Image (cartoon, rainbow, N blue to C red):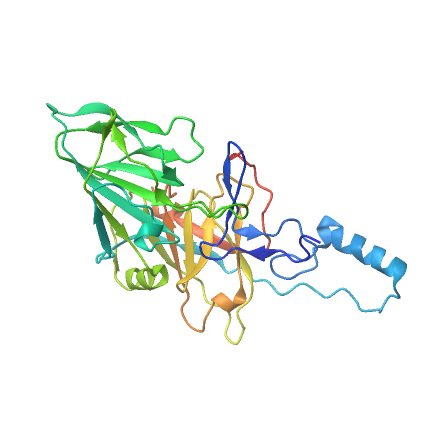
Length: 330
């Protein structure tokens, strides 16, 4: 049976599926409508658990064991989030004439920032076509720190009109969205081909990368200062405490109004959230991720945060998962 108990692709371990003309990163939830949920609960609502039990009892004696109750869940409630920035960014840097893949730089998961200085003969700011044919898997493009747009692996035209002037700094934030789960092991990440502007190959790249993401996020989380409302950015919040004497319980993180990113509870990588694409809307948060005392939630939001007003800049921890949201990606 595939599968009897749903699981969770914590961290960057979600993987992906692939066909002749598409690449589809898997969701963080690996529930797959299983008889047992991510939390290990009998998923009686999908009728599979009871149907399997009925078939087994048809051929084998019923042991008379009652269906176990679901594990306790707790609605921790609203968590107010505050925009933050790292005052000490990661210092691991690689330089090369042409772009290297993430694997060539001993990077296997997460993110990388490819940077180069563009020096075309331009008089003032002009619109030029940036092409990234070898994007693996998603690129957010910046010129002089101004966001220009997104190029994804599935895009037919992997190009973007950008506003650029002489000696502009081009930054490309690459996200490894998950390796293909089957077939040949040939799915390098990062930039796997040259990048061009109006057909001219760009050279002399510097790549900021992280060999051990949890350590870097831990460093970032300990040294944060408030800043403006641009994304990508880190957001930090404190989980409301449990009543005195109550042990931590499972919960689900609801990110209404947020777009795409990674969530960390006490530096444990809960995985990628992407509710605007669906179908997964909430993230499973196991009780084991909590600790005694203060619990800190950090979001790395890539695309949009509902934080134009402080009162709207929050997430919630609820007792019921939502895994059947509208699917836009396909």
